[in-house]
Amino acid sequence: MYVPTHFAPVDADVRALLDRPGAAELVTAGPAGLEATLLPWVHDPERGALLGHVARNNDHWTRADGQPGLVIVRGPDSYISPGWYASKAEHGRVVPTWNYVTAHVHGTVTVHDDPAWVDDVVRRLTDLHEAGRAPAWSVDDAPERFVAGQLRAIVGIELRIERVDAKLKLSQNRPAADVDGVITGLRADGDEAGARAVEEHRPRR
Image (tube, rainbow, N blue to C red; front, side, top):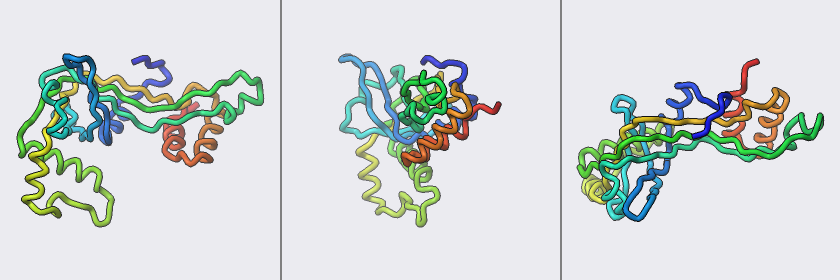
């Protein structure tokens, strides 16, 4: 990944992105070329891994076990209008761009065709995404036999992390007045997540 110095994240930025990865693409190489599947993930820092699951009927997992894999994790991304820059009025030498947060997580894929392992991952994913909801849904709210049947229909996926390449392109290379304009413009567009990301990572001059 191409990462100019001003877009390079600190370790805390990477950890924050991995701790709430949402759904992200798992990419592996198979006999017919590259394959990609969008999966939900939970970060397990103690194992140094991303944990997820895939539908048993999706045979991607049968070719991924033991193979190098790439999980593409994304944070906020936003179109940036040059009309938001104070620089536009000063000299006009401005162009559109795109802000984004991403991490390319490289590692080795392990398949877990084990209901107990999958049950643990499903519970962890549920707890992660139900946190803060009132009332929060729990796996135990569903009938036990129903849950057992659902678990048989999915297979566990683990990506043991070997390298993370990450980039936070959030207008850090722009003058302070341009950054102010980006934040205001994004909020006017209703993109609060994008505005907050720019605000949190603006250079402290």
